[in-house]
Image 1 (cartoon, rainbow, N blue to C red):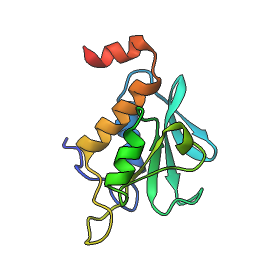
Image 2: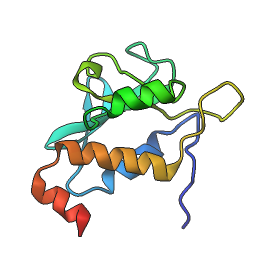
Image 3: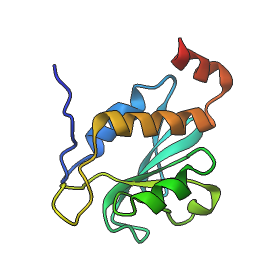
Image 4: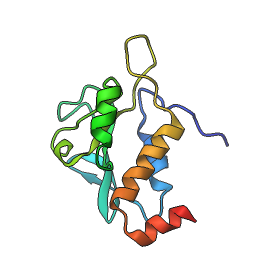
Length: 133
């Protein structure tokens, strides 16, 4: 079965869920009204046009400096999310259509890499080591 390269812009949640739950020991819970994924601590949270979001998106943990770099270079695709942005978390647009002047379509490889990096930021060392095997 082939996996879709891009999410359905109208409903990217199943696509994001599949990527998150493929990581070791991840659980899904509703947090602050949104589906969120945890590896003991939350590392990704989906957002549906609330908390000031203009797009279907997710917020995730990010290594130091990544949020600033991506928001500065691609502000149509990445943003500083409210509430957690001050801690370096990154906002990622999922419902881009790739239309001129709009956000690019989310790509599975790129989103998988971003989600995996978020996981690495919060997961215990033993679980991170599982990714490297």
